[in-house]
Length: 155
Figure (cartoon, one colour):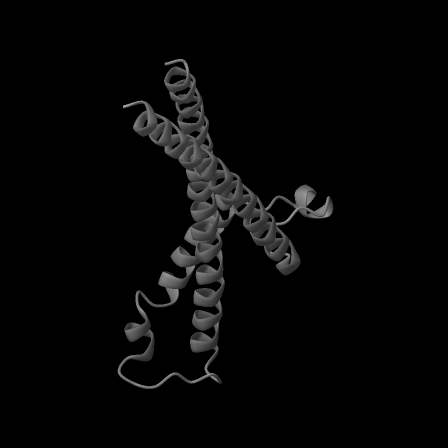
């Protein structure tokens, strides 16, 4: 059992290292993508629903919570124009020269952009949590592998 135990200990140790490295990669990617999302949202300079003093400071919608709030409000306003896209068209075709159609399509574009930001922030949070879990798991496996290796070499 001595050789098999050493191989098993080394395997557990290697799996721990792999899990640790993958966790670090997940965390790096999660942070990088969160920064990308925030940068892109800031570039769009959406300020809808922000108090005037916040806009004066240069603040814009750039968090998941803010994006969710604004998207929900835009959706409510869009539904005041027409409850659904089909209701807007009333069996006809989209007419970009119709101000009602144009306003509706601009609203749904902004709404979708903001909901996509909310979704992206949520996904990066999951990636960060997964990375943290992988690091903890990697540390546990690495420590277990080292202890097992020590026990098998002592025999």
